[in-house]
Amino acid sequence: MAKKVKDMLIYKGKPLLRSGDKLYFGDFSENFITVFTITEKTKLKDLEVASKVTIELLEKKGADIKSAHLVKKAERTSLFEALDIGCFWLEDILEMEREFKEKLQA
Image 1 (cartoon, rainbow, N blue to C red):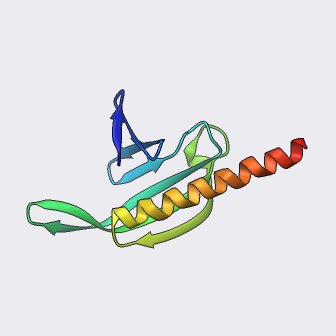
Image 2 (image 1 turned 90 degrees about the vertical axis):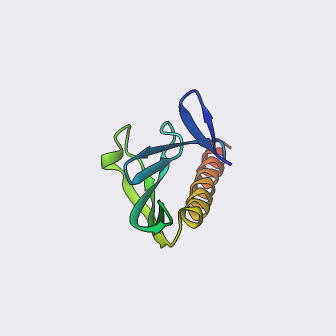
């Protein structure tokens, strides 16, 4: 469940920021971030819902997201499905990065 803390939406312990049809998930101080792009919407009564969402796992090169390198990409038919896979990808790669750093220090 997402919650708002000090004007920032937090989902599964990480910031979730929205700019138009793009959602950025993850801590910008870390090396990886997930970007969700809503590419299609469907009208459901008087509400528009995402019907096609592109998920991109990006490796950041410094603070600028524009220079990030694409690691993985997929497409899902709902925002919930996209968040599910995007969160898994991000947590998985951050865990692998932590383990790699620990092995280097050993």
